[in-house]
Structure formats: C-alpha cells, structure tokens
Length: 529
Image 1 (cartoon, rainbow, N blue to C red):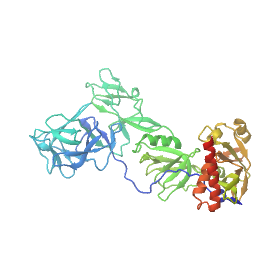
Image 2 (image 1 turned 120 degrees about the vertical axis):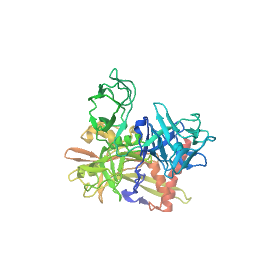
Image 3 (image 1 turned 180 degrees about the horizontal axis):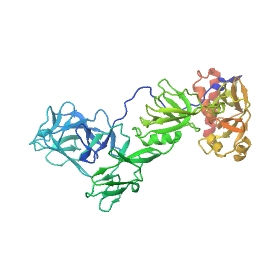
Image 4 (image 1 turned 60 degrees about the vertical axis):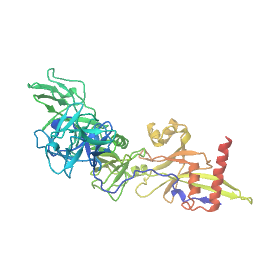
C-alpha cells in the first residue's frame, strides 16, 4: 500500500514566532540616581535606595520602621514596581528642608530612645529632612529634637529606620524619570582655570571661577545609551548646541546629551538593540526595515528579514493597507518586553517603502514538507517500510505566481552546510544564475520541480532515517534570481512527528506501526555503532 500523507501541506517542523500581547500595557516607569541637590525640587517623586543590596524603601509601614523591597539597578536606574514607596517631596517647615509625603502622611524620626521611622499626618521639625548630596554619598537627617534622626538602611534586618549617626548602610535618592524627556545626563569634571575637560564621565560644569570659560563640547564624546545611536546635540537649559560647538559659561552648568538613531536598522540589528535595553524601552525612536508578514486584531505588525528573523510592532498606528512581502519601515521606541519579545512599543508608525511584486511574494513564501512511503507486514506481525520519500513544496496563488518565470529548487545535505542559513550562503556567492551557484559549491544539488494543484514541489527518493536537508525554491524572472527562505528538515524527526500525531496526519494503526519499525531499526543501528 502507498500512503501520501496530507499531500504537500503537511507541516513537519514547528515554526517559532514571537508572542504578541493584545492587551494595552502601562509603560515602565524608571527612576534614576540623583547626584546633586540642585536636581531636587518640591513636587518631585523620589525613592530612597540602598544600592549595595539593591533595596528600596517599601510601602510597608511597620510598627517602628519601614520595610525594604528588592529592585534591580542597572546603570544607576531601576524600573518602578508597586512595592516601592513613591515619595512626593513637600517643603519642610525649616529652611532648606524637604518633607516626605508617602500618600497617607509624612515620614518622621519618631524617637530619641529607639531607631524609629514612622508616618504622621502633619509636617513638624521631626518630619523636615535636610538632604546633602556629594559625589559619593547622600545624607538625610531630620531637623527635630528626636536624636535618632539619621535616615539609614539596616542590611541585617532588611529595613529602613533612623539612627543617632550614620552607623548603618548608606542610602541614595532616586528620582522618577519624566518619560517625555528624550535625553540623558552625563557628568564630567571641568577645570575652569585651564579650560579643559578632565578624565571622567559626563558634562557637568561645576568649578567655574566667575569669568566666562570656553568649553569645546567636541572634546567629550559620551557613551551611547544603545547600539546604533549617535550624539545629535547637547542642551543647557533652553539652549541646544551641536556636538562640535564651543560654549562660554560663567556659572554652574549642566549639559544634557541628546541622541538619535545612526541608521535605519535591519531586523537583526533591531533585535540587538532590544536585547541591550532589558525590559525598558529606548528613549530615542528607531526605524526598522523588513518585509511584512502579518497583522493581528490589535494591529500588531510582524516583519521579517531574508534570514527569517522576525520583529513585532506592538499596536502600531494604522496606515496604508499591507500585503505579505511588502517592504516597510516601522518607527518607534524599541523594547524587549518581558525579556522575551523584541518589539517596537505601542505608538509606532509604519510606511511602505515598496509594494511587493509577484517575485517578492514568491521569495516570501513558506516552504513546507511531507513524507510518503510504502509499507508491508508479514504473518509474524513484522512491519517494514520502503520507498520513503521526502517532498518539499510552495503554495502558488494569483499573488506569488510569476508569469513566464523559470522555477526550480536547490538542495544541500545539512551535514555539508556550515552556516545557519542556506539562503544567505547562496546569496553570498553573488551569482545571478543557477549554474553559477552550482559552480560555487559542488555540494549543492539542483532539483527538478513540478506544479500540480497550485503546488510547486520537488521530492527526494529513498531517504533514510538519519538524512537531513536544506531546500530553497527559486524563480528566474527578467534575468533575476529570486530565492525563498530555506526549509530545514530532518527525516527522523518527521517520522517521530507522524507516528506520535497520527490523528493529525490521518494515519492508520498499521501505518504507525510501520513507522515505529523504522524508529526501532534506527535505534538498533545506533546501538550497534
């Protein structure tokens, strides 16, 4: 008996795609380290942190102190979570002090006999905190009569409390980042007397002597926050300067670096940027170019490159109608959502670079595979398989059929392919003809193809359990060669898949037993070797 399993449409390997959520998500809220008292003002939202243990003041008010919650500090930033106490700065009742509003009251140093940090309804001296910040430390001290008033972290008990001196672990202040600000601050020292930048990081001018000093901004090149980003300018208050400008200052000044994408990204490069961000989105927009694959009900658009790498634009702004194979560009902030889904975050936009031709749509076509075989059994109940064939095929329709095109297929054993992408290997030869490709690699085999019921197909006869192949289909149109993505197929895995999913492939019990005989034969051969 001969059995053709589901024709050419039977899929024998799973395709990995990126999961896309259809739910609307709140953007991640970031906090960054405060390195100067001048960066704090009434109304700012802050968190108090012990950096060594990556612990932040928590929302849990205990009877005599405050709890701590875990955070992850990366480059002096962390992403807010609901367990972190959000503090809104208010004015203390003493000069140059702040009060810490925690929503249901104000934190205060509560005792002279115990290390107590509590919450009360009003602001008094014990709830008025003097903050001092220098390059290496932050001091927060209440200004009331209660003597245990130094805000500290107790790492032994993982809590925050007030002590008579800085006898415990140090703290730092982190401020909520305004998500609308597309810039990053870097600190460097400036020697006003010599007019030169000292070695160090950042652009923070702090040592001016009162007379104007010329600062050559081109002498400092801060590290880019992400791959494929370039410095577009520096801001000082309302003024914006080119990176090569010379600026005169006569008092303390802070310059902020502004960034922009250095190029239009490939899908592979966009994934690289996403992997560099963790779970926070980039503060600059990028443009990613790729071929349209699909769009879901939440308008999340999937694109891919010629290697099969895929990238998602989450809930993109609707634009022109898209068809598979269209070359498009998507612009927006990149994020590696939940550390597993590289994507353009919500709010991205797209534009069509070029509509897909039938040749483009053919090149975007999926290659599928199936098995066929003869089987027999004897009166002892022993099964055998013969004429095992592996078929590959591409569905043709009115959109991807190339009129007057010349079709064919190229095949290589997986054991002869040293690269992950057969398609890219072929392209690397820079050949415009099939003969040129075959001359470039004598391991590549040209396969004849047939078209039946709108399926372009080729087959490999008498395959073995251990055989593995890569196949691409091609079409030659107007002296140009167009290649599909490659299809990788391991015969042994196909057999296991068919035997264990017989209902999906409409197999009889006899057919399954015949396939199991092949699996057993292969297993015995492996043991003998």
